[in-house]
Every structure is written in C-alpha cells, then in structure tokens.
Image 1 (tube, rainbow, N blue to C red):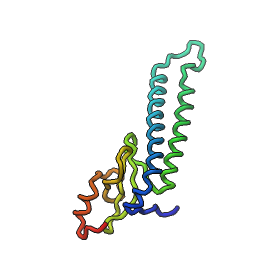
Image 2: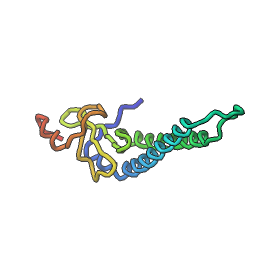
Image 3: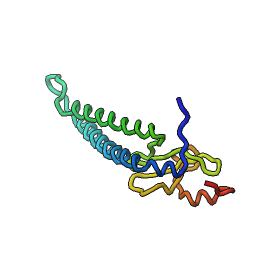
Image 4: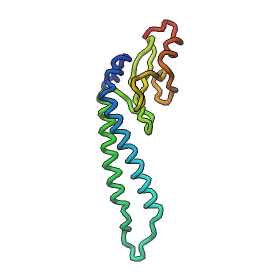
Length: 146
C-alpha cells in the first residue's frame, strides 16, 4: 500500500474541476441509493405472508438489485476519488478532503459540493474534526507559513 498523497492547497484546488464532476455524480447516485433502500425497507416491512407459502412478488428483489447496482456505481466514484488522492467525507453533503500540511502539521483541505473553491480545512487526520476557515487556522500557527 502506498502512502497517501499530500496536497498543497494549490494542488488540491487544481483538482477541483475533475473532483467536482465526480462529487456531483456521487451525490446523484448516493441520493438515488438512499431512496431505493427506503422503498425496499418499506416494501419488506409491509409484506404479508403468502397463504400458499410462495415467495412474495412485491418488487423487493428488483429493488435489491437496483440498490446493488447503485452501490457498485457509488464505489466506482469513490475509487476515482481515491485515485486522485482525495477522500470522500460527509455523505449527503458530498464533502471531499485532501490530505495536506500546514506549518508542519497535518491538515485536510476541505471542500463541499457547491463551494466554488477550497476555503476550509480540518486539523489533523480526523474526517470528523470541525471544518474551519483556512485563514483563521493560519493565524493560529506560530509561523503562519502555508
């Protein structure tokens, strides 16, 4: 396994035209997958036993296949992001992080679908850490170097 790519802020921004398209596709497929799963769950939840013991013909099998196909496409988009060196976070908001370094400390340049550029970061390697403005973070480091 290779070490993750480390981006400068400028390098991360340079990937956005490509990453933006992947994130849009990922968002569309993820929302469709969630809807299919909901329909599947509702279908299965409202099943009634067949008096003849036959398997129900309620569409659940087709929904299950549709969900699996969507999951495969979602994994394809996630793989594309990994190929670039980006990390998908915040499903539903299509957040994308790029590992980086700021003043010698690990950060994740943080972008969300719909934002024009990268203006936020997460400190450290934790995708659950709070997003904060890059300019504010630069001011808290002793040397302020980017």
